[in-house]
Length: 386
Image 1 (tube, rainbow, N blue to C red):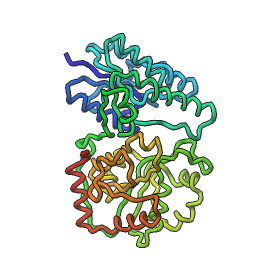
Image 2: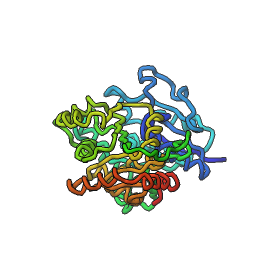
Image 3: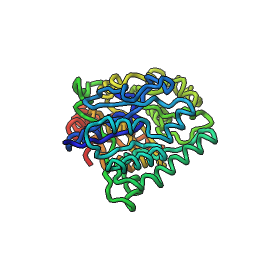
């Protein structure tokens, strides 16, 4: 009888957050090597006040059984999420197969330690999937303190009790390697068959280069006076493109609207007015629409400052774009270095040097149609190879 892996975390299925995409992809890896895989995620379709039995939330997603607990909204909800592995024991009792392991995706520390104890009672392995080292910038004192404590306890204590670890970057692998040899490093993966449904797009001869950014660079706490911990430097993207002399581009931005952007960077109002139709804010859009537009773009783009948060995680937008067949414009971050092939799947920009960055961008935007076609073909054939 096949053993079952229970994957638990803040997934919003089918495709409402990046966590769900990673979980499904890693779940497919587990399935290929011979395990049953089920998921316990979160859902905004009901609340804690509805008092719904988790067994009644069962759905199927991409061939997997999934269950959900309510998305934690109130302070009491969030406290329960931090302290208890919601629904896990009930799902374990419900399943009629032996449990191989419980994989916890960036799970809260105390709840995660309780998962470890549950695993011990059913002879299962406790395996954290560690993809982020969260910061607590921008929150109020109490919330920042709770976030700092939970993250520190999870990363520096609870994860060291694991039977094995899945990490997403060389930084995290190195951090845990001294205490554990049972580590598998997996970048954020995507199922190319799923992303390429409906076909892939190749470059269409066009003097205007189509560039796309997808994501939300801001936390709810980010504002013009508090930009600490901003991970994606969309402001540097727009500022740099605004300096390109020929301006032979259109940048489509998905995930944030113009008003929210200007709340954080009001000094860019005149720049956006000058660029006018060169910068298009599309706000939040359905995931499949964004994927279709990634495939139809010449490049995707993101820049990131280098600090612990960006070194610890792996940019899902990087592997997502290449899997779709679209090369990425970015700066060099240690976690993508094993996969970035300059001029093939990745075009690197030195964002710390104004002269170099402008020269880099102008060279990218003046690539010949033939060279751009080759990069698209390379991405489609090779995806991520480290």
